[in-house]
Image (cartoon, rainbow, N blue to C red; front, top):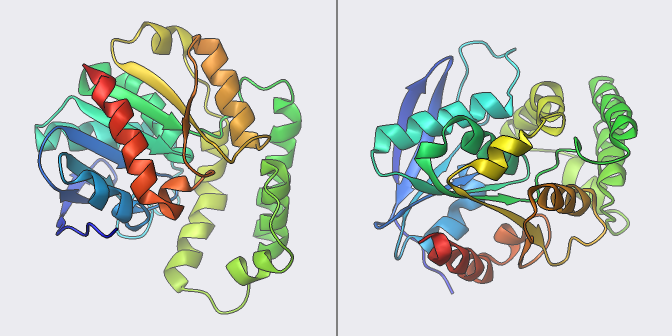
Length: 276
């Protein structure tokens, strides 16, 4: 069922960048964060939640409509968390429930560590950080090979290695359909930034377990019901175990919020209702 809402589009100047953000609805503040996914990827989920929440989505720094002063600056979870902190303060509507997926999940965790007073609940959906995995050195070497492959111009080869590392199996021919042929120049630019300036810092992020465990905000680790055996499933379960919390299952896989925003919103709303 469609619940499209009108979004108020604005820009916030932050150190080194201009942050594109969109606001929908009214009620308790929910921030939806991705990396490298931009605000558009979260729009259907934001529309679902806007009936009873103020929902904020952003393009992370350097992606799509959030230009950098220095295009060669690396994007780290700590920098992105600082951007979200400034945005929440600017809106003066916190503390917020912060839902982050993939690289955005790492951003959400970094925000709890640096600005816990701005967060009511941090929902980290499938963070790809491999700091707590036993094969992290192998994963680090694979990541460097993926980046090097991309820099040779072999985009399909890089994505094939990325999917293999993530343990995501695609049907024959789908990889070429997704990343081959004529492609949107903005998508290609965002992809280039992800591989060259964002991937490394995101997966190498080291959680401060003591700070996360002791933080007043509630920390939730989310996993897709269809992500069993994938890299982000393993990384999420390792982090949940280290924090001594039970992971919460969400509909779909790594991008369940894109594929089924209605069911995903219902689960997120249920988690949000436990914020107290």
